[in-house]
Length: 311
Length: 297
Image 1 (cartoon, rainbow over the protein chains, first blue to last red):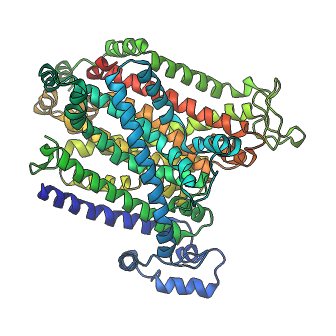
Image 2: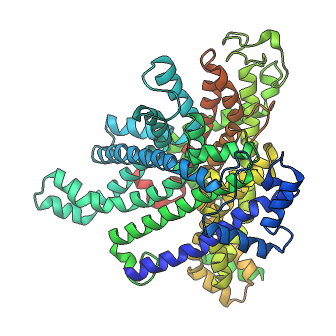
């Protein structure tokens, strides 16, 4: 078990290095002078020169990368060309908001999705099953930004129940979290249903039933535990999709998170902030995957026999 | 050489047009898949015949006709520049379908060869490719496309490239996995013992057996590409005005949401329906191509 966890942790190191190289490369790939891109469109020639010498832009690429990586490890991601504030500070202010939004969305999706999936599986082909699976199909297909706008139109503009954007009270969180979580809810519902159906057909469930156990115990104590494994894998992957969706949701609801900061910075050509935001989102996703893999190892003992692959 | 291939072909599971017919038979019995196919047929015909279906120009500004509510003349109303929303949605279908198919082709053209070489030969090359893919998928979903757009700049063609690049890791992983499992089959060993070249084994004997998952994934991937492209358009990082791209229409229509909700409602519904069509067809194809999942229906 611990061997697996250490292996898994070590595997994340080259990925993180690769991510930092890619993020470093963003500015170097942009046609034109990287110093000008980093300093900003309206920067003076002397400031551009200052940036060029600070980042050793006249040196070979690998030297530049090592400077970038060394700065990164000290928490220095440069300064915003727009506000001139350190990128780290900008991200530090925004990241908790993105975390709050995605975790709430995942929470909503897990509770609603799993409940719907379990009920659908146990009452297969019932009205509830048909309806929730249809809703799940639509939920996966609906573009998250459109859904957000429709929720705004209905709950904020027409009914006036909830604020249409911004951040402050818990009411501000409801619409963005629901919007962001809907596609994941749908997916979790579908996976839970098919995984439950799969498990419910197995011999040990028949044994449990023939022992005379109540159906409720069979479902929740015997079946659910094994049915959860694929659900957790999907949840890990969904976190990535949620982070991508957060970029869109934050834009719709003026939610002051990293995603919105990233989009605003791309449009304003504030490249140091773009780099920082992309890096933070990617590192967050890698961390989530790491955690999911470790949870997975605890849930499924087959993984721990030395190798990575499920036997 | 041909004789050798014939012998190996006989050892493989038969992949003739009878199998295509079998798949079609299963697909035809699947109501949801048929609904998906019907939606897609409708959208594709509308996209092809868009100029014949409406008398309006999707980009021509006619301010005198601005912000008309839906009526017999303008089925879904007109926008703030007097352009017919229905016409723009029909033409937008062309853009979305083009982005979907072209970006998936980019993903296939790079992902299939890299994935199959990686799976077939294994070793250091495979390890290297795997780490590279790990890095790419560390940028989840639309984020990789956003990173590429940041570098390439905005516009429909660049979105195609960006979304295409973002789908490469998906195909590479999928094909690598399929090749790994097919590689162990008896007919591959037979082909090898007959001295058939590796390149020929991959192209003639392994890849045809991986076609099922590739087709299914591509169907879903077109849907994802359409969603991502619309998302980029919505963020201002994709298609640019006056393109009648659905995501862009939505983000522009947003400013008029209180007065004219149809400017945001219908382009969004168009995206939803098209994505739903591809997803339903993909679900159906997966069931039809994989005998094990047939019993779940």
